[in-house]
Length: 116
Image 1 (cartoon, rainbow, N blue to C red):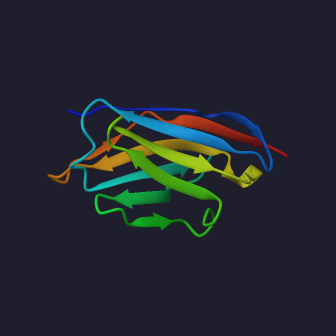
Image 2: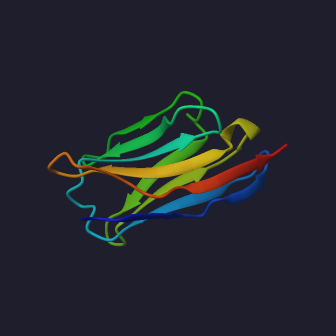
């Protein structure tokens, strides 16, 4: 089974930028959907951004215009570029892929903390 490993999290100041990476142990070429989710303390996990196999993207309203999801199939990696970050972006960020057979796979998460 494919395994996902996120990286790139850390401490960043308000207004700064960060790039998260999600490296897959297997090919992402045939994955139906790739996405990033986040979970802040005491809150439910929420969608941040998704990218379909065909290239369609979807973003949470709270991150539209600030975050960008992309992929590099040659590196089997999905990225989340975060710009103009805000304290409310503080959360654990999780990578998710939906395989061609509908299997949902999650990474272990990477923490992003935005200081005010």
